[in-house]
Length: 171
Picture 1 (cartoon, one colour):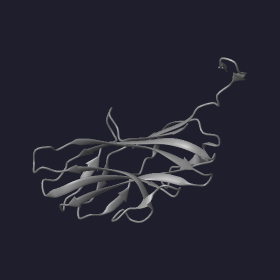
Picture 2 (cartoon, helix red, strand yellow):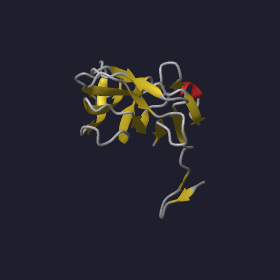
Picture 3 (spheres, rainbow, N blue to C red):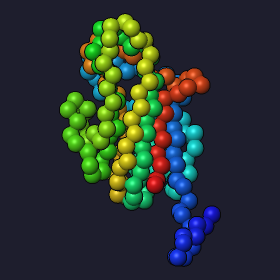
């Protein structure tokens, strides 16, 4: 598709590069402040070239082109424990613009979403984190979760029609 700008030449935008990954099964993560990488293991689609931009083993996206990326993590947390204080989602990067994340297991956090648990009133909660990052070639991003307090595990939903997922778009 070409776009003609008034008073200028024709511009053809670059092909969209998009990645969508989900969990193929529920992923448990422990209480007691443990920080866990979300193990996205089901590639729904990947139009990045090369497709090696996604590492299924490390659950990490690595930029193969320098530019601005929109990164969105959508997490559905189930079995939230009544003795926990918070559920946290960290969007992590090795690129510029991140700030050291206290308790996030190292790396830089560019965005965080927190849910303050209110006793036993909610058993399931959806958390969404979106940020626009500038990534150089080789910079990476991934998602981590943490349950603050509590001793039992919570779960990220991955085996149902609504799934925990990660979307990365080159803008």
